[in-house]
Length: 313
Picture (cartoon, rainbow, N blue to C red):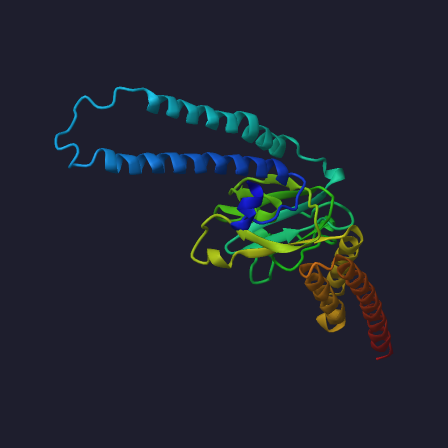
C-alpha cells in the first residue's frame, strides 16, 4: 500500500521512525478505500433499488435486517485495532522514547510569523539565555538572545529556516513559538508537531539519508503563511562537523568582505546536498571551514596592524 501511495504523491521516508508511521498510514488508507468502495456501492444500489418508479409509495416499516449494524460494528472494531495496536504504540514511542541530550544533536527552533529561527548551542553545548524583552527584529535578534551571556557567545544561528543535521544520529528539537500556533512539518522525516505559545515541545527523529528537503508550516498562521518555508539539510558526519565549524568561524569573523569566499563555498555544499552528492558536499564544507579559518587569521592580522598604526600615530 505504501508503495502505491508513493506513486500518488506520498514522499519517500528518510528517518528511522518513519516505518511505524507509514504502517499506520497504509492501514488507514486500506480502511478508507474499503469504506469508499462499500458505501459508494451501497449508495448507487439505493439509487436504483429505491427509485420512485419502483417504489411509488414509501415503506414506513423500513429495513428489518441487521446487516448495517454488523458492518458498523466491523468498522468500529477495525478503527479500534488501528488505534490500540498501531497508532498508540507509535505515538508512545514519539513522546516517551525521547533520546538523552548527550546522545543526540540538540537544536532549538522558534517559530514566528513568518519564519523559522534555528539555533545550535555551539562548542560548549550550552544554549545562551534568551528573554522576550530582548527581541529586536530591527537588530535581527528574532529570539531575544542575550549577547551579554557568556554561553551565548558561541551559539550558532544559521540562515533563517535552514536546519542542518548529521545522518544516522538522533536529532532532538525543542520547538516553541513567539506568537501564534505554528506547525513544524518535515514530510520526508514523517515529522509534524504544533508549536504552542508558552510551551517548549520536544520533537525527535533520526535521519537515515543525506540530502536536502523542504520544511513547511502545516498550520494556517496568518496572511503570509505561504512564505513560512524552510529546509532541512542532512550531512555526512564529517560534512556536518565541518559545516557547523565553518558557520562558527564566519560568525566570529563578522565581516562579509573577509568571509564571502567561505560563505560561497558553504552555499555550494548545500547545492551538492540537494543534488544528492553528499561526498562532494563534505569536501566543500571542509574547504569552507579552511577558508573561514584563513579569513579569521587575516582579520586578526589586520587588527594587529591597525593597533600598531594607532600606537604610532
